[in-house]
View 1 (cartoon, rainbow, N blue to C red):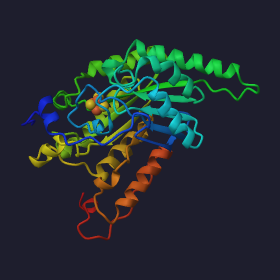
View 2: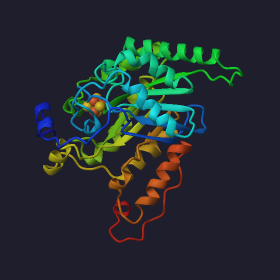
View 3: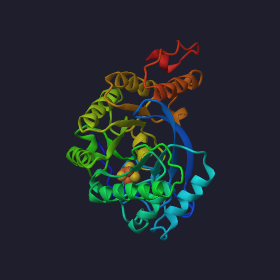
View 4: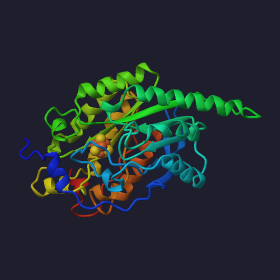
Length: 337
Ligand code: SF4
């Protein structure tokens, strides 16, 4: 099935240029609504921190485009957090995503961890992303820093605010449980690594989130929904409490090269819908589909916006909503299945 495995050297050769970035400013920051573990939709401050590129070079990854080639100066990450939080509306939860691994010391200097913890101590939930193989004692140390910072903050309040238990969550890429495709993605991770990472987090009172790819390179299009569902099942079996399914996109060089030779096909929104429609009723945890750049996966220019609105609403409500009606446009791929 896999005809052309792409080596790490080739992945690097196929890359285009990086975007200019400023180590004092996050690449992006915004507030987005998300269904919480307790049910209601609440705002999440989402920061994409600027830092050194991830040392893993996954075949499908394009996050390196907005990273630096060297470690950012001491204090830069806390300053980036200040920069974003000074400009964002209030939110209860925060994602500190960093186009890599929060516990990669070359990306986020560990000496900055105490200050980062102080900057985010007011949030009810703090979510970071990390490779399963880098998931270990550093996560527990940061969890303790968060709790210490929260206690210090509470002790300085004149009027105590209603207190919520602080929750720490680590998001890890599972990508796919397909036995031939996972090793071909250069993720340098086995299913046992993921399971160990999730169990380690759980045993230390840290929540886990999973990222799953819909239709990664080499995946036959008629099997991709099924493999995404199998991957979700595996992640929930490992004890994660929330998962996001990401339609695999081209644009990093390597995936484009595979698309040209028929080893990657862009997924369609109707496949994303099928995954969400089948996974939400399991009630095993929250399941989201990633709608960033969703227009590129439209089945049809006429009804794509309506599909995206439905998916967005299903993300928020964690309920399967009625399908949108048949599209009047001749040739709509959603109608033709
Ligand atoms: S581990 Fe994550 S950030 Fe690093 S290369 Fe893979 S997908 Fe990209």
